[in-house]
Length: 248
Image 1 (tube, helix red, strand yellow):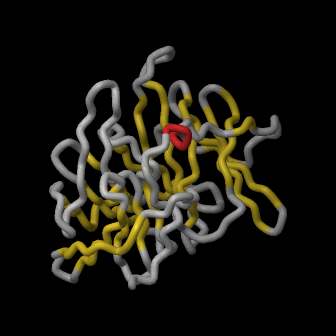
Image 2 (cartoon, helix red, strand yellow; image 1 turned 45 degrees about the horizontal axis):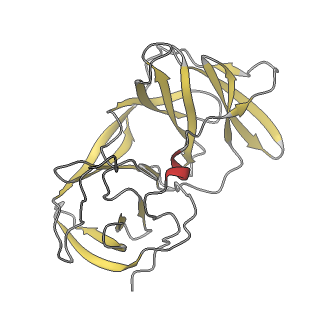
């Protein structure tokens, strides 16, 4: 049996998809503000890409297309174990699938068990007291906490702010955050970007993300303690898993 946590993997649940918009920040000034157009010193580069086709056997996740006002159902959550195995949900069959990737990038898929009935949200990283808060309609804060002392880094959205969500913090103390801004005020379309910010408020890396996948994700992004960021995207054609890492 694979020794991995399975707490985050779940069935599609509309209540869990409410935007993770931040609580309002206090009016105190930020300790540092990041330029919304700043160029980062490093990049989030893709170091692994996997494509899984749908199927009904034990080596493929299943997919139920949308119809009659029902949303598409497919893999919507993931987790990565300390041994590098990737665990994804298969809500159609109510099971968990484990993906092992070898040094050559080849992968094998096996059934890891049944999906839990009462999952808890967890996007990985290391335990942290850091958080995000809304500062205004066009900016949010990353709040780093060290021994009770807070350091606020303001993140301008570069437009109307939809949400700023903490994905997690790695062992180096770097915060990985998902920034979403409305393309146009009053319109639902958003632009999405991952920013990596160090505890001193320096912009380490940034990367634009595509639109959300067809299957509404419970957790789309998962951060490992070492700082590898995984993204899960289920479409009508299959499931795409991507690993991104900070590189100079």
